[in-house]
Image (cartoon, rainbow, N blue to C red; front, side, top):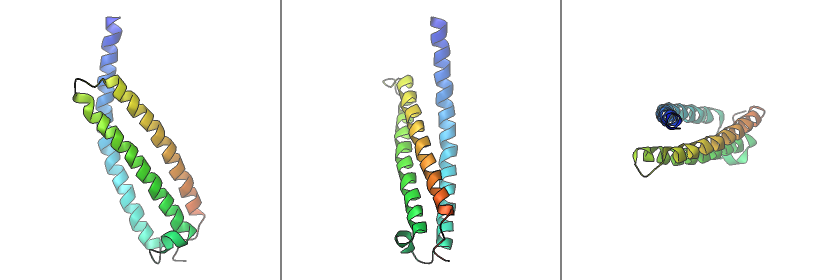
Length: 127
């Protein structure tokens, strides 16, 4: 029994380390996607009002809204991972929270991809 608890402790430590490393890379990647998407939007729309007057612009706003929801979920994950150093927090519970958040983010990412697929079929505002 003690050997399996030792292995579980090592597994939790590895998972925590991987999560911290991945989190940094993911933050940079998402920032790059948001930046390039924003630049692309400026090129595709003739006026800011096209964000709410065209289907193309509305799809952009929906994608942005979904991304904001994903960011809120990620803020929760970052708060949980910061507590892993504290003795009162059990790593198992924290990792379970992260696992649930990852599932939620996956659903949100699929929704973003669905909106992006709709966006491809719409004419940009400049046309």
